[in-house]
Amino acid sequence: MTEPNRDDVLRAYYRIRRMLGWLGFTLPFLLILGGWFSQGAVEPSISDYYHTLMRDVFVGVLTAIGLFLITYPGHARRPGEWLSDDMITTVAGIAAFGVAYFPNEMRTNANLLGSITQQALGYKWAAMAHYASAIVFLSALAALCLGRFSRTAKPLRRRIYRACGWTIAVMTVAVIVASWFKVMGPDGPQRVVNHALLVLWGEAIAIWAFAVAWLVKGRVEERRARRP
Figure 1 (cartoon, rainbow, N blue to C red):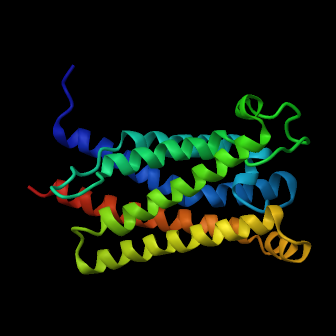
Figure 2 (spheres, rainbow, N blue to C red):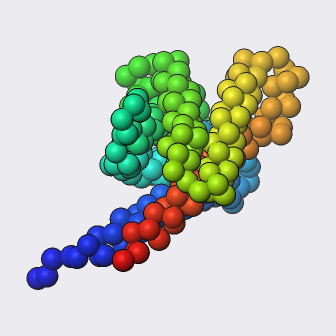
């Protein structure tokens, strides 16, 4: 049995990397369309799909994203830099696990017993861990786009990375504000947030922005690796 050569290893690596970008890009579509066809409704946020028949998709895709981010080494830290690619992606990957395995609230019609984490921590603390993980996850993705991806990129790609990074950052703030109104706001603003699905679209736009940056970054690195 012959050992795989460098080109085979690189092809496998970049195929997995592309898959991560496409998983992120398709996750909101899978949840929204799957939820619509299975129950005829669209949930107020991506996290709410944990409490529907789309739970397996929600948890499975976030687990796959988290695993790849944790194992992704990235580029080495340069002298004078505080954080490395590996550190940021590891934090993002662990946070992705938190988003997947700490439910945001209790839905008795979906699971009377709740999750293991809800039973261990209680529903309130599990929800707090979910929201904290989501903030860390999106913040780490924004840091990758604004700092790590754009540091050596050419001007056009740098603008793409920065646009994606600022989109993630702005959507993260918007989701935090909208989530507060969704959970604890007055009746009027709460109805607006839920009716317009502001949390859902904010989360989806942030995920799409990172997926675009990740696919562009992966494509550039793949081309560089193929040069003789």
